[in-house]
Length: 380
Image (tube, rainbow, N blue to C red; front, side):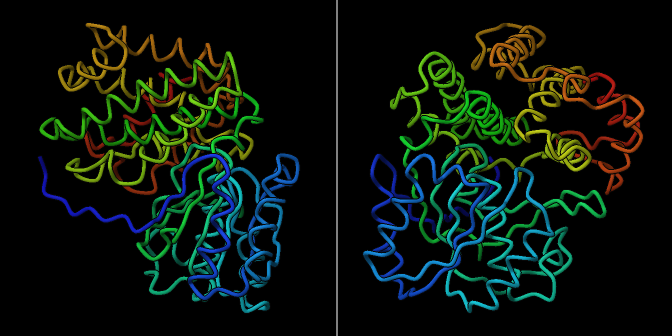
């Protein structure tokens, strides 16, 4: 098991009605005004917006609102919100939404101290300062509510890049599973695949971190079981709560301890999909690339993938485990191939160029451009 340091500073309030805790948390931190970052308006339809305003008003915190964050959030919208945060002299950034909203909030929080928020992405400029961030989560998928990661798309260059900084861990995150009951099942399922993919990015890197792998086995199995339950009954609060907490644990550091930082080839590959086609949901794209990646990689290292097939899917062969994974993705109504995602074969060379921003991709095996091309064909 590799040496590691673990620290996660985010305070979580988990459970039904916990949004009411937000105002006091911000008041106790001395915050009197904040910029609220939100999406297209769904929070006004599920009571979240009202609950947030009530708790902030009750604690005398002024709220300025910035709407319009889309799935696969864009640099252009973040730049717009950075300007607004400067103008308003915001003391904190409050993200009310899913991973795209939270990622945008992190980019704004750091971006107010940079010449351009894009400077932080791709490791160009280190983040040395950020406004405090608070979140109210409305869809469980990315784990952004309890980590220091942010992903944005630069639509001008078709680059979907990330940055990490310990300074953009949320101070406090609220996870109320009840507010997710109105989500369309496809969004729930896409979020579930996103969470499973976060676990998988670590799972195969180090076979000596047995305790972490045991946690990861349980996380993946629970995500599958709870998503199946939610397909039958979207209002199942036991399933909704367990799925939400699994998605948080999948990328808050716990699932990767002793795993050398993970592989992340599949995320780099999928980021090119949704950079080229912003309408592709991140989790759905990962559901196409991960089974193909496991199938391809298990030819090189069969024993490395046998545990996953056995412990998660109850299969004695990796090929049957991969098929079970694909069958589950299909049963949840998600795409099973690049073709299903709407990617055309003539776009594959451009995808390959977007993916290969570095000479190799991944860590379990450093994939060359030729190998990534073979993987894309396998997924097509």
